[in-house]
Every structure is written in C-alpha cells, then in structure tokens.
Length: 188
Image 1 (cartoon, rainbow, N blue to C red):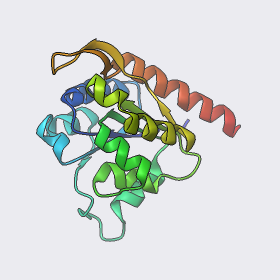
Image 2 (image 1 turned 120 degrees about the vertical axis):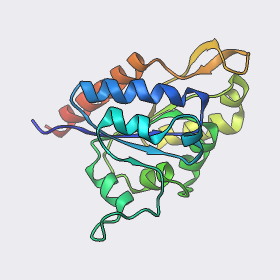
Image 3 (image 1 turned 30 degrees about the horizontal axis):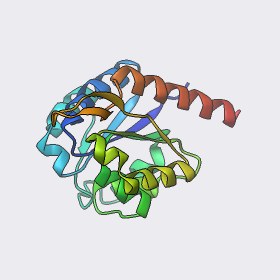
Image 4 (image 1 turned 180 degrees about the horizontal axis):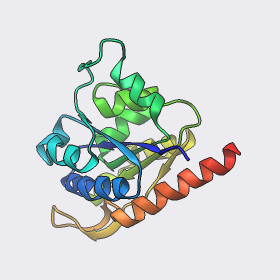
C-alpha cells in the first residue's frame, strides 16, 4: 500500500509547539508529513524542529522554488492525501475562508485538488473562537468541505478559561486517520 502523504499547516498560535508532537506521531505511524508554516508560526517553533521530526524539508516561503522544474506549492498540493491546519488561528481561518493566498499555508490550501480531505484544528482565545466572524468563516469552510477538529475547553495561555485550546494530539491523529479511512472507502 502506498505511503499516505499529509500536508500539515502550522499557523502562529502559542499551541504551535504541539505541531512537533503531531508531526512526530504521524511520522511514527508511517505517514509522509510535509510541514507548511506561516512566517509568524516560525516565531513560536523553529522549522528545524519540525524538519528533524518529519525527516522532510519544512516549507515557509511560497516564493522559494528550489527545483526549477517544479512549482513548489502546486507540487506539494498535488501529492497530498490529506491537508490539515493544526493549529489554525483566526487569521488563517479567515484567509482560507476568503481565498486569500499570501503565505505557504494559504497558498497550498488554494491548490489542493478537489476530493482531497481538508481539516482544520482551531486554537485561539475563547472570545476569538466565538466571534461571529470567525464562526461564519468556520461555517463556510465546512460548507466547502473542511472538517473541523473542534478545540477543547481549558485554561488558555492568556489566562481565560473556555473553548479555544487546540485539540489533543491524540484527538487530531484519530480524526486524521478516520478521515483517511473514510476517503479510502469512498474511492473503492
């Protein structure tokens, strides 16, 4: 059976450090994981950390074209068996919902082939998560085929308690594996 290829988008949330555990767990389970990061996500966790865990290059610059015969963001999108953004900030959710493609995560998202599973795991302050604009953006993303891995209720980094904490790595991995299995069954 062909190795499944997961594109993991990481946006600028304090929970970006959990992308290391997620990358590690997915890699241990035999998935090829290509990590895409927004520029601000690199301020929370270094690309080198995620590269060391995935054993693959980490993509941070949409204009970096290391192979002249390929357009990097298009090539990555074509290879994907699943695209997931974890953590997904309100900013990234807004970009995805409105077709703004100005960083590696949002540009690759726009190039994902129809039928490729797309998932999003929000992580932000409770009031940001509950904001009607954010909820509208999430509803639209669900309408166009994204599945939300809902945030947990917890004490947040800002000191508030409420819904907005990134789902656990175990929850995200389970959601990814369920989605991949469902997609395989629908292709049979």
